[in-house]
Every structure is written in structure tokens, then in C-alpha cells.
Amino acid sequence: MRLRETIKKLKKTIANKNKELAQIREDVPALVRAIHQLTLENQELREQLGLPEPNVTPLLRRR
Image 1 (tube, helix red, strand yellow):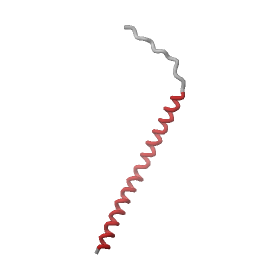
Image 2: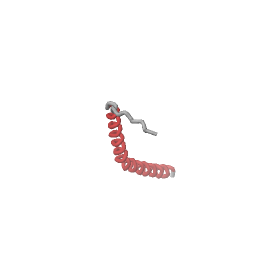
Image 3: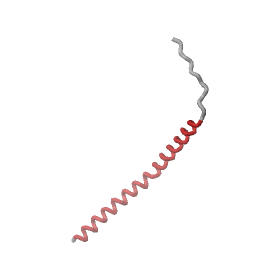
Image 4: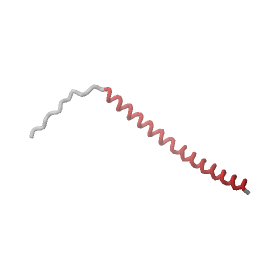
């Protein structure tokens, strides 16, 4: 009797793990896209940091 209960529990655990793996596989492409977007934005910001300061002097407003 205990063996059948153990088998039943293990089958349930396997089913839950398979469901969890399927969800993870579905989430991976969205996570890869997000990482790619953040990498591009980070690269762009680093390039902007490397640019020289603009030679623009703000004008004071008259009151």
C-alpha cells in the first residue's frame, strides 16, 4: 500500500515539475528580449558618456 502512495506522490511531483518547466520555457524568450533591450540601452548610455560636453552656455532669463 505504501509503495502505491509513494508512486502516486512521485507522479504528482513529476507532473508539477513538468508544468513548471513548461512555464519557464515560455518565459525565456520574453526575458531574452528584455535583457537585449537593456543591453542596447546601456551601450547607448555608455557611448553618450564618452562624448565631449557640448559648448552651450545657457542664457539668463530677463525678469
